[in-house]
Every structure is written in structure tokens, then in C-alpha cells.
Length: 232
Image 1 (cartoon, rainbow, N blue to C red):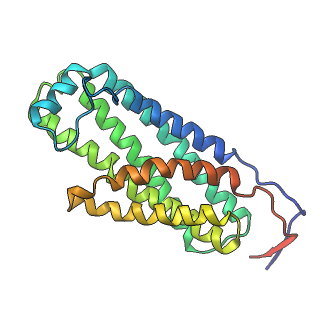
Image 2 (cartoon, rainbow, N blue to C red; image 1 turned 135 degrees about the vertical axis):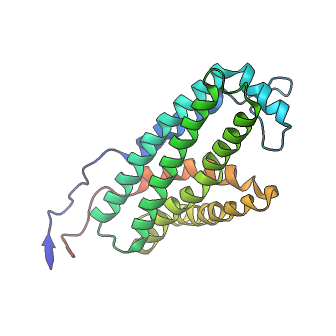
């Protein structure tokens, strides 16, 4: 079937680069309230910290935890919009195949996991919850799992789902394709941190460079179709 479209038709939708910037800023703003670079200041607990350290942080800093939960929940919305927009643009540019569907699955799962982890964090910040050490510990590890490996693995799928089809169609520069493939592999390998805790650093190695990649891809993916027609 032949579908004829005007030469130079521009994809209708939000600018995914700007949407990715908003997502990144909201996510980092949430971390601002719980992350300190001063070793003498209280810091958001790590999973390896003793139970009393974890409990003390949430008991003494409910407002900071609440603000972190709020902004990270907000970050999930533009991530979902970004995913839908990038998939729509790839389809508009004539890309076919399972890759973009895999990217859609990964991006929506990543957005859902960010939102879920943020809502669990909100529960932790709710008055009285942090005073129950057993409940607090369970909720803390749950939010760490969902917001950690639960984000890095699907984020890797999102990046792969955009990178691979774009590489075959030559829609993104080679350096960004290579960067995306590396991030996608790291993201999938981060799943091993569930079995080998020493691999937990793979999670931030996917997450933060991944946001940079999303921004770059959002601005660099063409929005204008150059072909006059395409096969459907």
C-alpha cells in the first residue's frame, strides 16, 4: 500500500529534547533535598547502612523525603510523554519493527517505576510510618529496588529501542548511537545487582548518563520527513 505525504512534513508533537530536560531537572531537584556532598551532614541512607541509621534519617528528615517524593513523582510524567513522543516520531519517520515497541515498553515501565518508587517514598514520609522500624525497613528496600534496578533496566530498554532502529535508519549521529548501545548494555547488566550487590554502581551509571542521552536524542532525532512517500 502506498501512502503519499507532503515533502518535508513536520512531526506534530512536543519537542522531546525539552521534555527530557524537564524530566531530568525534576528528577535532580528531588535528589537535591536528600543528597548532601558534605560528609558531616546527614545523607540519604544506602542499603548497606545499619537499620538504625536508615530509621534515623527518615524519622528526622520527613520534609526532605516528602519533597524528594513529590518532584520525582512529577518527573515520571514527562518521561512517559517523552517515550510516547519519540515512538510516535520514529513511526512518523517511517521506522518499523519491534525495536520501537520495545522502547515504548521500556519507557513506560521506567516512568511507572519512578512514580511507584516516589509514592512509596511518600508513604515513608507520612507521619508515624518511620517510627515503625519493621515497616520502614521493608518500604525502604522496596522503593530502592523499584527506583533503582527497576528504573535502570527499563531505561536501558528505552534507550536501546530508540538507538537500534535509529542506527539502521541513520537518524542519529554515530557517536550517539554508540553511547546509547553502551548505556543499554549497562542498564540490562544492572539487573545482576539483585544477585551481586557489588554491581549496584551500574544503576547510577545507567541513570544519569541515560538522562543526558535522552536529552541529546530528543534534540537530534529529525522531526521532518524527507521522503515523499513510504511503503506501509
